Image (cartoon, rainbow, N blue to C red; front, side):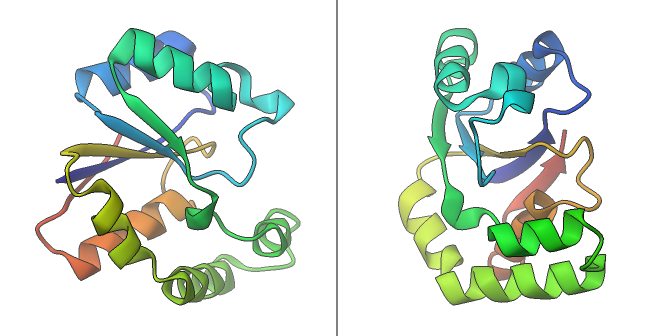
Length: 146
C-alpha cells in the first residue's frame, strides 16, 4: 500500500486532478475538519467527490476522525500552540481514537490512498503526521507527498 499526501492550496484544478490521476490514486481520504469552506474551491465535498469519480475514477471519503479537533487547529493557526505541541496533541488524539486498526480494516483493499488537506506542503501538516503514524505501525506502507 502506498499512502500519498496532497494539499490543494496553491494548485490549479488541472494540476490537482492530474496528480491524482497520474499517481493512480484509487481512494482519496479528505482529512479536513471542514470540507465545505468557501476557500475550498474545486475541493468542496460533494464537488470533489464528483470530480474524482468522473476525472480520475477515484473513490472519495470525508474522514473527520483523522482531522485535528477545532481547538487544536485553532490554537496552531492563531499561533497560541507551537508546532511541537500541535504534533504532541494531534498524535495523542489519533492514538486515543485507535485510528490504525480502523484504517487498516476499512481500507486494506486499496493500494493507492491519498490523504487530502489544504496546506500546500506536508511539512507542517497533519496529513504527514498521520501518514507517518500509519507507517510506524506498518513499515511496509510507502509514503509519497505529491
